[in-house]
Image (tube, one colour):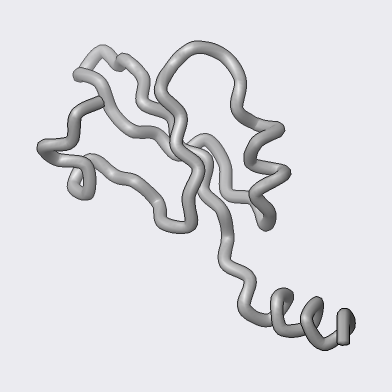
Length: 69
């Protein structure tokens, strides 16, 4: 049963995006730091100051308009 679950999970796997909100000379922006296959790998990439987001959808400036950062 575990093999079937692992196979389904591998077939349906979506990338995990690691995004950081940081200051930039043109203004503050959301920047994609990395795209990794698992959430555990994403947590390993989070370091340093700033607002971080880990999710299955990539954040861009158009998707975060009006959001409180």
